[in-house]
Length: 303
Image (tube, rainbow, N blue to C red; front, side):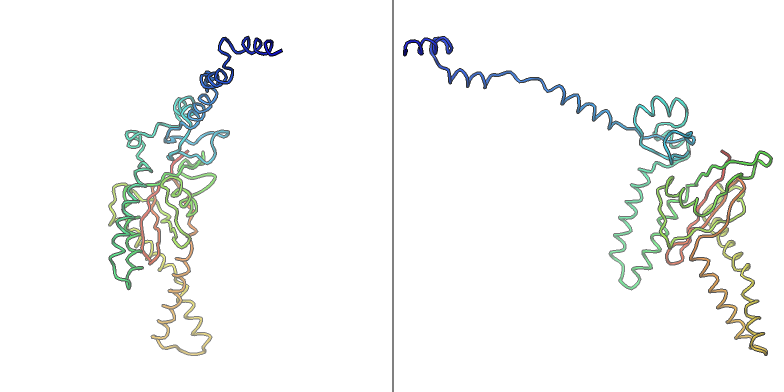
């Protein structure tokens, strides 16, 4: 019985009968299967993550990406850009040369400049006195925005009336459209207290006008707004009539001034109701905290 067991052990283990050591060696030197599925999955993930930046040159047709308009910069898959957007001339690759051709500023570069200016502004703010700290911040914020918008112009596309090619039909451009375009094209999100007022008349040679000329146009807008507040005088006359007698000129002047001031404050608390319906170059003013005004140029073009 013992000899039979030893013989079966020798047959199963070899000459020396080292079953345990043989099994350990087998586990140590067992060849590993190649990890091809994991590598392929990793390559597929990398392939899906590969995206390129493009400048949209035309509004995309229905059925394509929603909320994408001409003049905007987007990240899309490389295949979508290579096989559809670029061959169909809906977009070009976001290179420095293409930005210059399209007359646009790279949002990434603009964001870096804005971060640098914000850092510099924060440094200066830390050194200022506590008394005028808030006023200085408002002034610096207005100065940063004014410099950023100095050489930029929003481009808004609209359908036109076949019988009147210079008129938008249907549709128009208002302050809300400018807010949305600022956010999409220039990545500027105005806060609720920052208001937009549009000059309703086209400006001839807008691109050639300097900052001083633009500020003069905005001053004319404000002066025109005060002149249109003629009902303030009528309100003062009504007060005098209700009094049943004559009013001292000084009192009448103070009543007119108070009513005009109230009307002006109400206008500054909300966006204007102007609706631009004609193609052309326009200027608007952005009113920031502290009453600081920044000019904004925009162009309404035919689709």
